Image 1 (cartoon, rainbow, N blue to C red):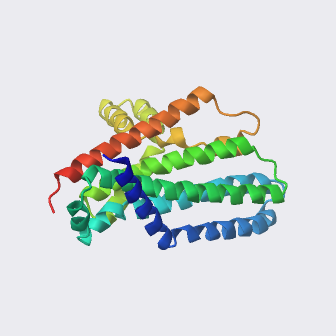
Image 2: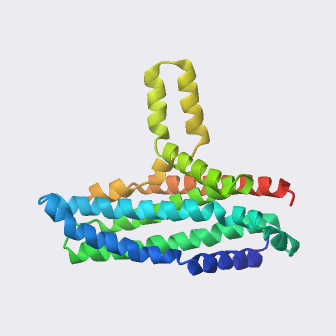
Length: 259
């Protein structure tokens, strides 16, 4: 793989997504925060600060997830369905470069999206004089980018070998299960059924443990202490390694396809 060709592909993906006005969703995020800022005091006179903290992080996560799944599953699949992939593979660019370039391009969009929403979120918190752990929020935002990048790799992998709709459903299903894999293991142990226990352990080993990259609760409720540095590095490494594994699978499947 050549870095220059990957960079060009990533740049093209970034520009294409921006032209599709995906980043306009930042304005929507600001609007829903403004609405929440006005509405929450009407429902909870004493806990509106905590509700706003929680809502801001959850909305950021939800918006990032929607963009990741719907854009990510179509990155390669759209090229295949429109047959424009024939133009790409006819150029002096390898299939692995196509996969990695598209992944990095969308990951860059997600990083910009999350960074901008985080700034807007912190501005609202500062304006409303709501006590908040700025460092923990920034760390949670960084790990949200890592989580969305992992889901991007998952979406691209599904999009390489199946239709966009099915890829979207599969990616969303993996996201849901990936957030509760540790709970599934505990459930399997409580069932005392060897078959169920084996199934839950298998899901835990195969599917990504996305809870390791979800620090929004620490940002909202852990006001006093920062997360452990060793745990942060370990979890970040886990996310990057899992993303690399998914990209390797996507590259292998894509390289075997004939067009």
